Image 1: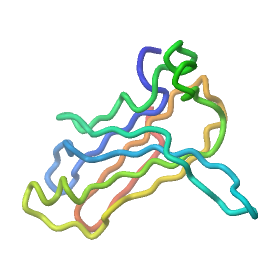
Image 2: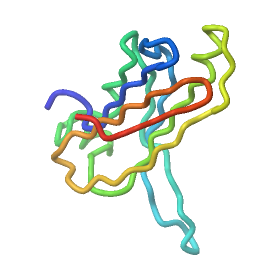
Image 3: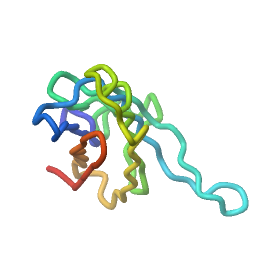
Length: 129
């Protein structure tokens, strides 16, 4: 696979178009001191003209992933979308300053695609392919 093992796609369902320019942050879960749940930053990106972000992480098992310490492993991750700037650019308000989606990775050899269907006052997600 020559792309990130985690990708996403943001569609503005209120106008039926891709959402370009949405900031995307990927975080990884760790149990913190005292048993506190902690998500640490792992990668960030921005959706392209097609609403996609396919460069969050280096390809799985690549030399780059090993060199940068971003090897994709089983565990719990969270992807955070920040749609406010996107909606402001098109002259609309957004109720959700960010959308957080936590998900489990059981098999790091698989590709994980996280689509987000969003409008200013609602959102839906699912595991894509």
